[in-house]
Length: 215
Image 1 (spheres, rainbow, N blue to C red):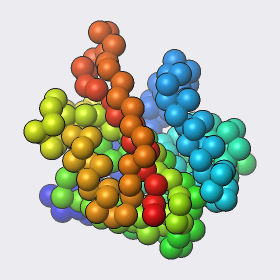
Image 2: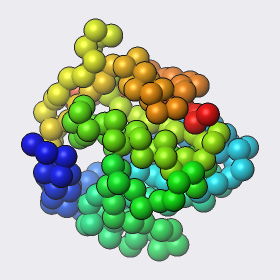
Image 3: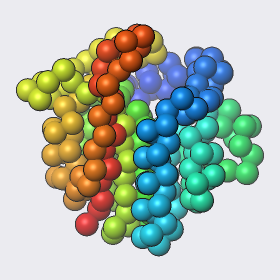
Image 4: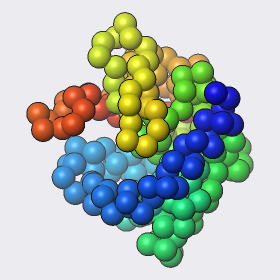
């Protein structure tokens, strides 16, 4: 499947479930204190580096974009799903949301103070991920910060693993491998959190948040 076909499949799949997704996850940060704390630290770092705009890539219905705005950031959202973007605009009329591809962002070079990628690369096949990271590096200003969340593989010797997802095929990454790939594009890891799954979680995957900075 080509990159264009993968994007089309993901977009159409999320268009079909957008309303259900928005209802299920609109308050998903409520019971995630560690993630809220990391988002707050991310916001503080962005503000300290000049308070540039922040793109929430794969923003879905926009609830995390709104959370970033509430942390004092000038945030906007980008998502491949037009239906998700419509829902985000409806729920957050004061914020900006755009339809777009993470591999071809309509954003000027070096114009962003920060990028959030919260689970938004999980449907990107491994061979296509370099194009996404190249775009993130392109749009970030020097000293800009990336916060990226993803599910981890079962061990360091497994660079990637595909798994069944309710919407469309998804991928897990070795944190070390993903951090090395970010370095290839001038994004240096500055912090990492690894959250163990709860016994009641459907998928027993470790969840990783990497914070990286552009030189």
